[in-house]
Amino acid sequence: MADTPVPRRRRKIRPTITDVAAAAQVSVATISRFLNMPERVSQALGERIADALRQTGFRRRSPLPASFTHSSAVLSTTIPTTPRLLAVLTLGTLTARMMMDMPVFPWLFSGVKRVTDATRGTLVYAHYDGTGPLPALLADRSVDGLLVLGRLPHMPPALRQALLIRPSVWMMREHSDPACSIDRVFYDNALVGRYAADYLLGQGQGRLAFVNDTPTHSAFAQRRECFLDAVRERGGRAHAYEVGVGAITDLRHALQVALAGAEPLQGIFLPSDNQLFLAAQLLPQLGSTPERSLRLIGCNNDAALLARLSPRPASIDLHLDLIGERAVNQLLDRIAQPASPLMQLFVTPTVVPPHP
Image (cartoon, rainbow, N blue to C red; front, side, top):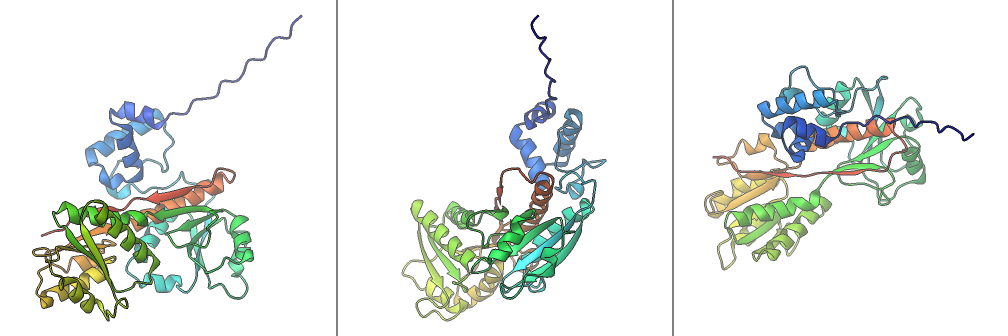
């Protein structure tokens, strides 16, 4: 008598993003935008998508709020059964306190805290400058995962081992992990210069300049090269004017040299909004009118600085708060699924147009 085959247990098919799109009668791209950047979806559309998520049972990164509002649409993983103890580890010369005094890092930390609070987690902090023994916190077995920020010239073997034995995620861009041995959540710095070129050329400006007072900043250097390459690819003309290069002494001097060409300069990309703010004040003294005779674009979307300029120039938003949110999400996912493939996630910047 032949053996009777044992029926296989049918695996429950989980709903997909395509199912949600069909239920909401929108595209898959719209569902993805709602899940990743809810602030870019209208209130009415967001409510419709939220209903579709509930109806399909799609496993979303955060529990749906009782009523969808933009302010409550915080990206976060499903709240863990046991609240997590997460550590922020800063590396190098800049401590967290020093970073908080800089214009961009408070946004990053606000995103980290927002998701940590939403998942009932706790944040602790440690700093390591690359010398001496590792912080005691790295030997604390009660720490569930690490959010790493900054870099060291060389990765000490003891630090690498500490990162590998527990879930870890590198935030921002600078890192000491070229082998990509832990997860990363970065902003796409290569796009910043290209977007700046696209914006200025799209305004009909063909003779452009990159002006920078900190040429040793590695992020600014990449923005410069991507900007110059993008301008040339599209048939424009651009040149870099940087402090300390070619006897240029300061930002005012860099602007002066840039404006002294045989043809009128039409647009300038400055790689940070603090430089943009200073340039907008200096240019009238040099005979140029920002946003009238000369278009400007900066980076960081520093609202406090830009609001003091009239008209307000364009800027590029790196979405650092979203990087903080996604870094915590990825860390919680890594804690829940330690054997899943390594992830490298990039947050795409966006151009914030000028205001009158």
